[in-house]
Amino acid sequence: MVAAILIPIIILYFYLVSKKDLKENEQKWKSLTQLHEEAIMTGEIVQLSVTKKRFYYHRYIQVVDIHLKTDTKTINVKRITPYTKNSRPVLLKKSDKVRLYGNWQENEFRFLRYEHIN
Image (cartoon, rainbow, N blue to C red; front, side, top):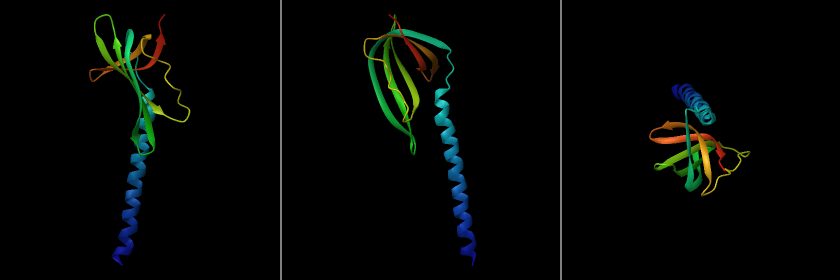
């Protein structure tokens, strides 16, 4: 008798907890496109790699890792965006001169917007 009452309550509890967790991670995944543009980096792309990584269950992110050669040194720069069916490929290639708009997070420069320099 006790099991007939407790088992549905436990199942309902874990369902609600997992639904809440899914909603929180969905919000975090969508918030990757919101980045404050506090600084500008200008330089030439030395190395470029684009990877698709799992963010949470069926949510993926696209990580663009760039080694950017500035006037003084080489800096590691990242662009992290949600990966969807409508995601456009990054139109960057090695030896491009670019201007990146973003901010510093944990000794790495993170950006979303970029423009080519001639």
